[in-house]
Image 1 (cartoon, rainbow, N blue to C red):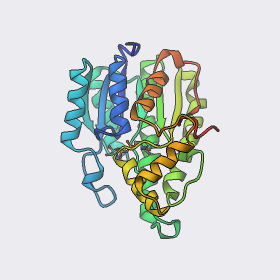
Image 2: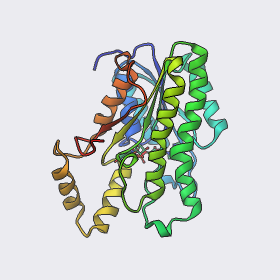
Image 3: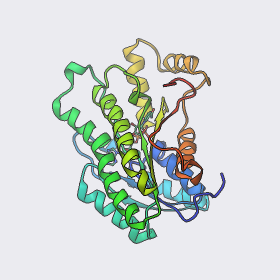
Image 4: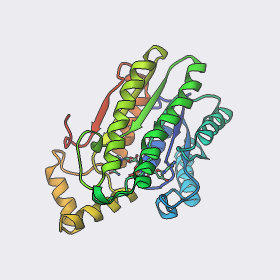
Length: 277
Ligand SMILES: NC(=O)c1ccc[n+]([C@@H]2O[C@H](COP(=O)([O-])OP(=O)(O)OC[C@H]3O[C@@H](n4cnc5c(N)ncnc54)[C@H](O)[C@@H]3O)[C@@H](O)[C@H]2O)c1
């Protein structure tokens, strides 16, 4: 990895789970030379139980890994649904590192899996609030900071294959991720004059903690073992395997770099060829 992000400051939301995509992106950005804010929600609630959010131990482990590899990172808590917390996150990042150049909207919940007719209104709302409104709020406050700096910036939205195709039993998730592409496009048009690029990354499947839960649910739904479910998935993916956290991190590092200056409003598939539109 070249150190092409030296001097840049990145904020990654929902980055507090060791196996998670956010942590992988934080590691990748730090390895490329960025100073990184590893952020995650710190308080569990009914729809976000403790075992599904990053713990203090995990966050410390992620920081240690980055620092031991020669990178620079701090941890800051933030529930992306809460505008005051989002504002404080950006302010604290600036206080610590002096600026914000890159925002990765990675925080998301995807474990609400049930038939559409069983989804309660408050469950729907929680998913939309975290996955879509959270990305909007973080973008709003990061962009204010980037505009005050006057030299552009990078917004990267972690959407999904489910932002382009339908999947059963995930209505709120799929709707929120399709919405993320709309947000990406709208902001890309609006912010081009500020030299701020806005892009989405659409992973297919990665066995993170969330991914493992989805494997179990959908294997059962299809009447397969988890192994059979994963083998069948690998067989239909042109590149022959599900995604890895590092596949997404590499894409995020590229979209954060000067090399991607002329790319904005894109929803980039990182799916081994499984998703092509
Ligand atoms: N794993 C996959 O197969 C896959 C595929 C496509 C897209 N994605 C997306 O990638 C992102 C990361 O997913 P992951 O698989 O690493 O899952 P994960 O559950 O490991 O990570 C999600 C993170 O979001 C955090 N979070 C939840 N609610 C939050 C809130 N209100 N405020 C701040 N943080 C909050 C959690 O604490 C956790 O750290 C998600 O947006 C997900 O939708 C994942």
